[in-house]
Length: 249
Image 1 (cartoon, rainbow, N blue to C red):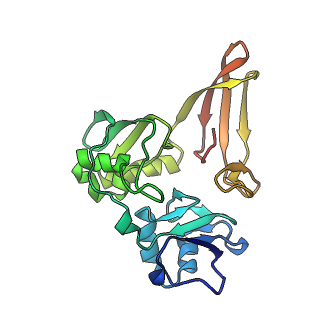
Image 2: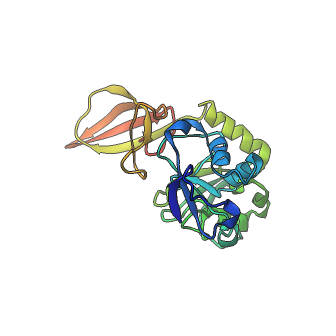
């Protein structure tokens, strides 16, 4: 694919592309909604179509799936693959993962390390989403097969999966209203005293778009840290995050 600013004269209409198209956000569109900016970038398609593609995971920001209303920032890279539906498979596959709990509205699953959450750029099948559809075919009718939060490929852990639209919308709203408590235990090098908070905005690093950094124009990121135990040159910390930014912890 090509990377360019979308005001370049050489941009091709999306329906004439033959490969992945990447576009960088300009300063004039800093902090605007993803669906608004993407529609502006690709005028051949309606905002409704763009929004549908975003929900399907076919529009990525810096390689990650986002919601239509999420803000984008100068230097962010949006990619849209017009032929992705040909390459990406959301078909059922026999994927190994543990179902820890199930009831009418949701599942709790344990994602093993090495498993990607859902099909997308660079990973077209063999994901947790493919495995979820295989075990629970009704999830095919939900956006992202009911996945409402995510873990990195190499991170193992517990995930909540919605089984219907009502619970999916409820849980997403709970997260947006910050009523979901996120607690972690971390082992770190060095010493720390008592309790403290870290309240610095986080955004994409200007020189390396795959990393995050402290930026004045970033998104609010609030973390509470408490020393749990000190063992030699290491500290065990209780960590609670008020927000859920990429790489926050």
